[in-house]
Length: 135
Image 1 (cartoon, one colour):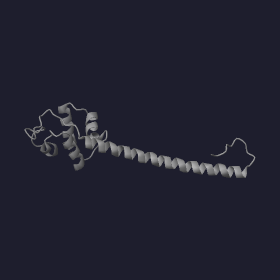
Image 2 (tube, rainbow, N blue to C red; image 1 turned 120 degrees about the vertical axis):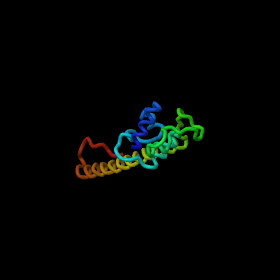
Image 3 (cartoon, helix red, strand yellow; image 1 turned 180 degrees about the vertical axis):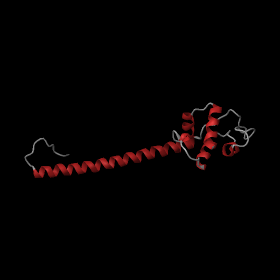
Image 4 (cartoon, rainbow, N blue to C red; image 1 turned 90 degrees about the vertical axis):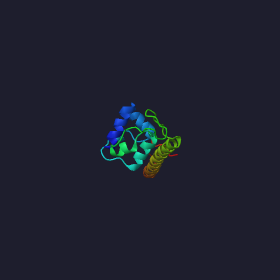
């Protein structure tokens, strides 16, 4: 139900899902997945779109847009805070670097294994040609 109301809000504001994912940092396709929405995700959405009426989003009661609350007009959509974006991007970079480190570690292990295979081959066949020296 909450995801449906989010989609209704986005449609009402003319905000694409792509823009929503960019602004909130939520993963692409999140709104299309089955299941309920967690409190942490609601917090992100409500802090990104401060004009959403929390009661409407959570329970479907009241108007979609806050009125006369914190001077937020009905057509104003706040960008996520730079700190949130920076932290989210930092987390993405750290995750990507950790994955690449793991891949490199596996490559180094495989190179070591292959060097050992070549060493054994050379010791068993000292006259073999076309086997380059290992570095």
